Amino acid sequence: MNKVNVYDFDKTIIPYDSTQQFIRFLLRRKPSLIFSLAPRALALGIYAIKIISKTRAKEIVYGFLKNVPDINSEVKLFWEQSFGDINLWYINSKKADDIIISASPDFLLRPVAEKLNVRLIASLVNSKTGKTTGENCYGAQKVIRLNAEYPGTDISEFYSDSLSDSPLAELSDKAFLVSGSEITPWPAN
Image (spheres, rainbow, N blue to C red):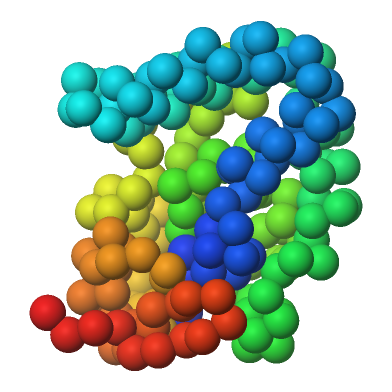
């Protein structure tokens, strides 16, 4: 396989966490969702004290999606309004064989990946129930998913905002840390 470039999405290709931004978008459009979402936010605190996994915490939070009647239309509208937020440096360097790999839900990122005409690996979350299939696509899990979905992939360049992505950075010929619009070489161990 040819060498490809691999990118994290949130705070890398786009300057914010797309899941958080999407939830804010939904709350502005449907304020009553706060009654379903607020109690679920406790799961994040329970995760913080290591009682439940990150995957389980996200699944609990995503359970509020059951109260969003037409989630696919909401996702489409969100990206119609947010696509322009994608960092220009990425738009200018994008290649058709790029792979975006993200912990954000597949249902949320799939439309933007299709519009960018790139491949996507993301957390598998049912948009209607919030249930997760498999583990949250985070840290070392990103390497596992990459090897499962694109075996033999050689990474030329890797970009991320987070050192939690070091397992992917270590597999890359070159890795870069993204902070806002600043791109610097990945820190040495």
